[in-house]
Image (cartoon, rainbow, N blue to C red; front, side, top):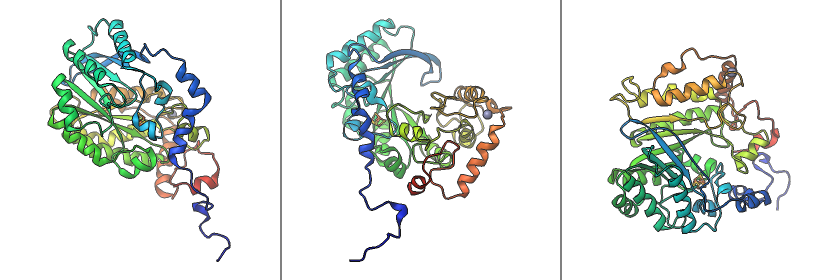
Length: 389
Ligand code: SF4
Ligand SMILES: [Zn+2]
């Protein structure tokens, strides 16, 4: 047998590669994560709060968000997405009674939601997944919101949105919307960057089914998933919005914010990932604006294809989308104003010295073969970086 130095050292040392699955799972089993899971009371939801929102017909309203403590997401049990920190708020012993108690707590806190026209019920997974949420509780949420006359929003992965399940749900409640964490309209990114466990095809199917029952669709897209340069994130972000706009009632772009114990958290700690620049979000909005408003209109005008919301969670912070530090709050504010108005004028007059550094980074990343990008914070091991996919 021939032996000798391998010619392709850049692809590894012949050892079995680490599986993304194992990397995702490791932190959930650490003592700090276990201790945290046991620390909370299963009779109370993780959080209940309210925010300004917009009803399906465009009327401004107030919305209560109820984040329940659940068993979590079945995809997380078997694998999990690379940025998902929901395991921090879930525990496998949550019962049907616990969930009903949490729901009663939320209703009582806000007086049967009397001052709020919309209720969002989030379960760190999919409300309509029977393995995660007892059917009886699914029914309680759907029925209560129907009886109280509230517009309901629930979250779901794609595979739960079957014709059969939606037929059942829409018999109980005719006014709900489903928010789907699609993250990327790109099978390669879904598989290798996000570890999402479903494909664009399953989203296509889910959308068809939702349309059959006239159920509104909110699509979440992730801006700058792990293992991606800033320039790629920008180009992909624009493309995915264009791909899904016609088939979504609302697109919500979530710029990556780093949650504790996730893969993206480890990359970030190792200085191998920089959360997106706020300038990239502004640029993305500028590029997709004509897709959302083909006749140059603004939100509420007849030409609007769908709603586009960008809310930079932890915007301006090191773990969220950020610029240089001095212009961050002004840029975040402009992005949030755009989500309401749909007018590019919101960005007029915004400028800062750091914009040139951002622009240079995007240009270089488009010209150099560095798949993970050259962001300033990327100071990790050069060799590992070159070996990366
Ligand atoms: S599908 Fe959603 S809840 Fe489940 S692991 Fe992925 S991001 Fe987390
Ligand atoms: Zn700046």
